[in-house]
Amino acid sequence: MGNLFRSGGDSLSLSNGGTDVFLDVLTLAASDLAHDAWDYRFAALLTLQDQNVMGRGAVGFALEEIDWGATPAAQERAKDFVVRVVGLALRRHRWDELGYEPPFAEGYLRRFKAMVEAFDPADAVRRDGGGFPGPGEAAVASCVPHRVLSALPYWDGCRFCHSAAGQQP
Image 1 (tube, one colour):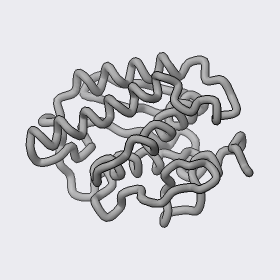
Image 2: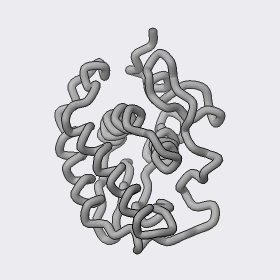
Image 3: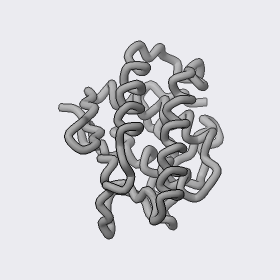
């Protein structure tokens, strides 16, 4: 069983362990780059992909289901944020804090970055109640021990707190 991150007919299919690694490194980068309201909504999307809470093989998202914004300028800014998050993760930002070496993370990130770069946010399907967190659901709480955004008030702790291999203080 695994998880899918999709864009049109393209997808990144990851094992459960690969998904954990992929989301760990993206969470570290997104938490440090988030600045605007949309950034915190994207960070919330990442926090809600925690398999230790949602179940193994039960996470993933499609780029088309993200609310990229109403205007071309907003869509470009949102897409740029995701590309910057992936770029920071590719530079091994805070990987020394993981407690493990993620040998395949760079490949996952390069594939996802190519999917995001090829994606046109104007193709997004706007759905009420879709999988993308709304403005009131943005990830604004921070896990103090791990210095990342968390999914409060949905559950206590961050993905690292919930992980069996987490960095408990």
